[in-house]
Image (cartoon, rainbow, N blue to C red; front, side):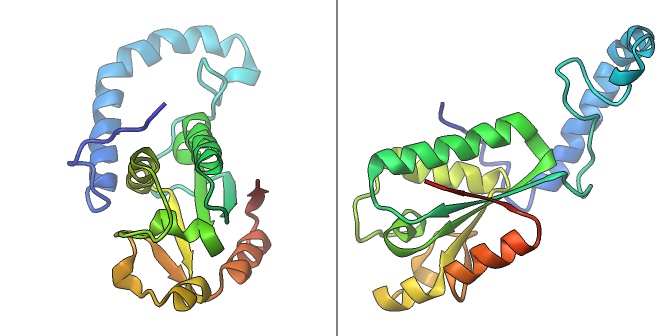
Length: 182
């Protein structure tokens, strides 16, 4: 499933848009929440969870409970789809209660380039752009970029450049990020 996001949801507008959406949901859903609160009170275990079993409503800026970093180091199209599908699935599963980072190193860095030097299909490029809009961080390995003769201007807007991709993976794990590699 391809994630699509309206242009009005730019990175600058994400927090304001989420706040407006949250305010609308709270205002429009107030009656539904009030009417269902009696049923939930009968089961104390469900007090802090919604009907789907997810954590209670979160506000922008609240710390997340889940942190996950993916290593993205191959140029294979099937690999691209698998990793990006997993990133999207985690985002759908945990919503605003997860912080996701994808570290592009070696041949995998080409998905983060404005003009990749290896084949990257249109769907992969669209998924990366969409995931960036949803707050997924993409980090590009500075060492790989140097080897390719690339600078920040060669990378997609919103991509963070780190000095060494491998050390970024290590440091994120030290900060409590779970590590996923294919």
